[in-house]
Amino acid sequence: MNILGINARGGYSIYEQASEMVRLSESMGEEMVLKEIPIERTIHALLYFKKLIEVNETPEVYALATAAVRLSKNKKAFLKRVKHETGFDFTVLTGHQEAYYDYLGVVNSMTIDDALILDIGGGSTELIWMKGRELMEAVSLPIGSVTLSERFSTIKNKKKRLEAAKKYIEVYYDRLPWLKALKGKPIIGLGGVVRTLGRIDRDLNGYPIENMHNYRMHELEVDRICSMILDAEEKDLDKISGISKKRVDIITLGILPFKCLFDRLDTPEIRISANGLRDGYFYEKYFKSIGKPILVPDVLLSSKENMLRRFDVNETHAEHVKMLTLKMFDAFEKLGNLQENDRKIISAAATLHDIGIHIEYYDHHIHGFYLILNGRLDGLTNTERLSVAYLVGSHREDSIRNRMAEYEGIISKSEVSRLGKLVVLLNIAEQLDKAERSTVKDIKIKILKNRISIQLISDDSVELERASALRYAERFEKQFGKTLTFH
Image (cartoon, rainbow, N blue to C red; front, side, top):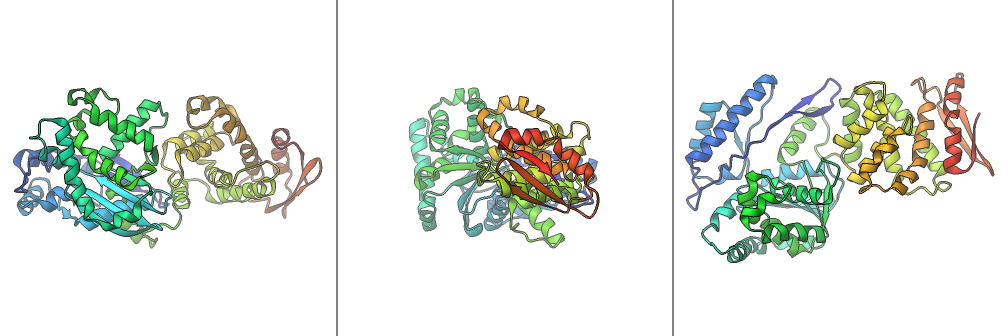
């Protein structure tokens, strides 16, 4: 369950979250009947959710049921009992609806055009073909981590059990001719099973960022993690860091829908999405209500705008600093051997440089570093997000550089040094709007033999802005090799 709050400026974020593994599809068997013990677990979890909803005074509640309920023969009796005992009135999603909301959750939070979206649940697996950010095909298959584990539990020999399960899964995949079009395309994985693979890999690598959204694993890493799980004795699975004790008995067969697909498509990498059905459902409801397209045209831009509104940033100042920063970036791109991707990074950092003021003005650059690194800035890789965080954390002083040592596995010391060119451009741009009144309307830049001349265009006195920007002239000369003057 996610409880989302929307502030007066339209910024949205998760205020409360709860998760209970109830395994509703447990023991359904071939008769496809929900059993009493899983039903009791589910109702117990729902009553807990209800208390959280009441405490948070949540005015709108949407309860969604997926494969276990959809496929069960006693769903009417189950839904009636749930309504009576908890008050929740559930909507049972079709397989296509479930896949569609998975797609919305991904396409609005990750920058990728073509991919196969895979969601492995307890009772089903959803496959979504995304091409050019559009949903081409979607299907829900009755193969989930719980149902697979139960179906083949009578085969005691592990090797034979795995072989039988693989054959069973491949039969479903053989019925989907459109999978051939996805050969060589990345997989975007959702759900607890896929996130477990990511957590294992993260723990093995000592990866310092907790946020798993857009975490990437390549072929060798996938093969290593899957082999660890498939080759391990079941009694030893809980010794693998990253595997929850609640998933130990279903993880081995639970990863097979992914592994079979990964091998079949010769996939170069998997990206993990922390967003899924609940997020997709929210996007549809909220974006419709404010007249915004359900499919955001630009993931990074939409995410930046949401962060500005969440943290009550002065948007006029942020946009003006971005404009000045990009003017300098474009002028000095060749001079500083800046990279094409640097423009996206410095643009995001300029927009969000003051985000930390939401916590406290003093050291707000450090607070901003933390918020970018640990918050949800979508549309960037983790390396790009760390780069943005570093620029935001350095926009007033360079003390944040000492904190980058623990992230050397993501950004090297030499890359941090290279980012110094971007830092000084952001430093100067912010000082050119020192009063946050857009006093410097525009700038004109001349690159001369030994110096850079920046003309400040304004209707008013710009002595404050000029004096403030000159404080970074020495740092600019160190990075770009030319003296800096303002007129």
